[in-house]
Image (cartoon, rainbow, N blue to C red):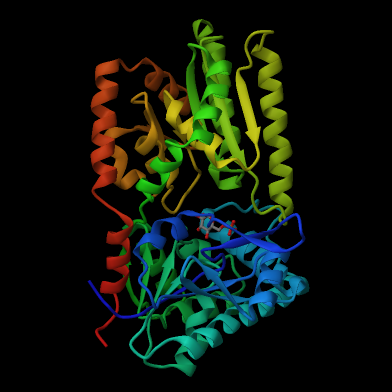
Length: 460
Ligand code: G6P
């Protein structure tokens, strides 16, 4: 489509690092759907600007003089003072803007915007400005700059000042706070946020619903909105299928089969994340086991959860609640031969993919989700024509609705009924639905997403 050079800008880059046995930083594969989906599409000449997010990243940047190599891609990694980075990433991006856009705040208690928070907002602005400076230095005149997500909305304002004619797009991988939501932010930061976003040539969202909420927030604060577009991201199906076909995944599947035997599997694969609604998923399963005695010992709920954002206290507390609830349900219904919930908290990608290969029912019940890639990835590798139970509040629902069981994420009783229906669907209908899902998923690829971003900017 376009052969303009690309500059991709995101907090987490297309490569990470860990310390090897010799204490030297070793590259690790990309985490997250954006990097894995885009990587095969990026041509030579693409620059990716990202933050060093760990000590090992910072060491790699020191060794490489500011640049790190990611499989032929030029990556500019910005290092920040760790305290300043925590304020920008944990306090503002994760504990404030993520909560704002997903409606996660516990309003009687939080948020409380105190002096510490306003200092963090200053750090957030400085962190965004640092990205803008590197882009301004490196982007060729005809480049398209694709800025990703809620970490970096304030890049546009300084970038416009430094490079007024650069083509820029911002893409939100989250939902967006609507008119009511935006009013919860303090007045000046709210204006700064939307005022900066309005200076991108266009702002993209996974669905029209989030784009409309963004426009409504702009109208509420009297900010003239930029052009918007809706284009869902898509998973890297080929890469995922490669993992699914690998020996490590086969081994994990054998382990899983030895636990499951001939029982049905309800599976969830998620970051251990408040918006994913893990607790109500377990409560729905409990309600099902309570009512349907015949299902006891005939089904296992496999929850494969990987730790996330451990710098935010609410996430640590949430993990304790998740563990506690699983324990309670297991001791209420379990027996010496049957553990109703197999809770796996850890970072083992082949194990998660093995669970996706094996599910009879995949539960994806987020409270609110920009898109949700797991709902696409599951059907791409599942081997049993399993049924997907999908939250109406996930952006993915817009496209996949015809072939899934709809879940009301707050209604535990309805979720239990959706699980029950999904378990009861016969083989023929399962196959028909799985096929329909495959078609829906194959029809939209990362290439479509990238093209939609490029089409949103004016010609050079
Ligand atoms: C999820 C969200 C993205 C977000 C990413 C950040 O994938 O859907 O919107 O950018 O998490 O994750 P991190 O682990 O870097 O905080």
